[in-house]
Amino acid sequence: MVKPSSLTPQHLRHYHLSFIDQITPQINNSMVYFFNADDVTDKFNINEASDVLKKSLSQVLTHYYPLAGRLITNNLVVDCNDEGVPYVETRVRCHLSTVIGNPSPADVRKLLPYDMDEIVDTVLGVQFNVFDCGGIAVGVSLSHKIADALSYFEFIKSWAAMTRGESQPIKTHFQSSSLFPTKDLLGYDPNSHIGNHKIVGKRFVFEASVIESLRTKYSRKVIEEGLKPPSRLEVLSTFLLNRFIASTKEEGDKKKIDMVTSTVNLRTRMDPPLPEYAFGNYYWYVQMFSTLDEKGENNDDLGRQLKEEINKVDSDFIVKLRESKEWNPNREDMAKAIEKGELVPVTFTSLCRFPVYEVDFGWGNPTWTGPPTWKFKNVIVFKDTKSGGGIEAYVNLTKDDMAKFERDEELLAHVSTKGLK
Image 1: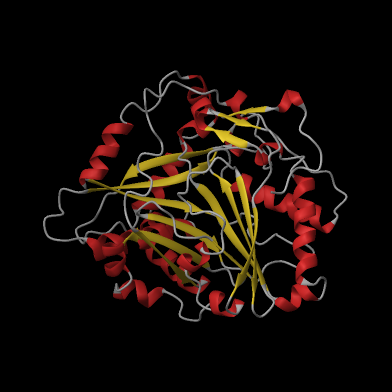
Image 2: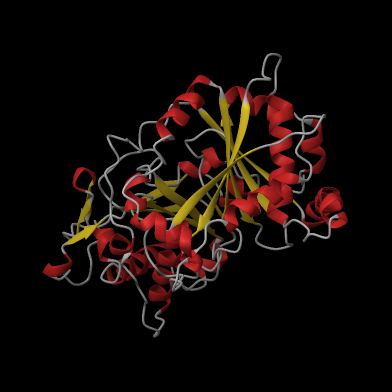
């Protein structure tokens, strides 16, 4: 257990969860950072590198004090008792290149302290992995119950800066519970649908040139109407949704409705805006129902529809969200429709433009970073490639759907075969 280098003051002993924390499933946001042996051993031997990380983790926990506490979900609070963060050291009996040559989310999971759907009371966990070649991988799991993806990466950046001995003060902002007070959810359980399906996660890489060709294909109608062309993420979302529908559709599926969900960062949409380092869950889901043409595809409207829904999440929307006493009374009906197969949700979430690679513990930025398999079906996570302007799509489907999806000929015609980009 790595404990904070100084005790948390008594008046900060209880960190209260927000409304958005309250409705967030108790899963673990996780990422693994891979570093080549030469980069690390130029600065430290392996034992020194681990000791440096533990020391700086202890120091940064004094700034991020809830992360060393214990989650008491029934009371919607973190007991900031300084019990510490589990820190595991692991020997991996293969070379780092074996894992990152053709990365598998299932392999990445083995380098993390927790499964994504493992419900634990510890808020943060770290696994320090040493490969036979001397390369290392640092796996970090942070409870989504108190932190969204941006909070995760801001914490990692702060920890890395502390490890390097940066003199700039670490900025924190722990006000989510006052900005979004908890509500009465009438017995709603956000964890009820975790792990209901056996999920297979696969990584598909799309080079910048391929994304641009898709952008041209899906821009024709909007350009004719004088509208702004769709973004990289919008066209890739459209393409992958079409391939999912085409590859998994079977006879008798006509009654199914495809629902597209995407995440929105609320920080910049609030009045006044919150800083990027505002810690907590400041995301919201927007939903829309896909409209298909006679070929069963959504060629032009998905990006436009998503933009329209996202634009509705403005400062007025957020004020209503904060002040309303009720919350989404139709959510249980929607969940039942999904379980019956009447409603097919496809969720897109993006880590693009997030500081995924801005992690320097003193031996340079990682060679590659990657997430494990998600534990929800039909979730697609986008992440920038380290260089070249491409995008990695992490697709998480049921075993049967993935077997069909990964054989789709049009999908394979667009996916890069050049390995790690």
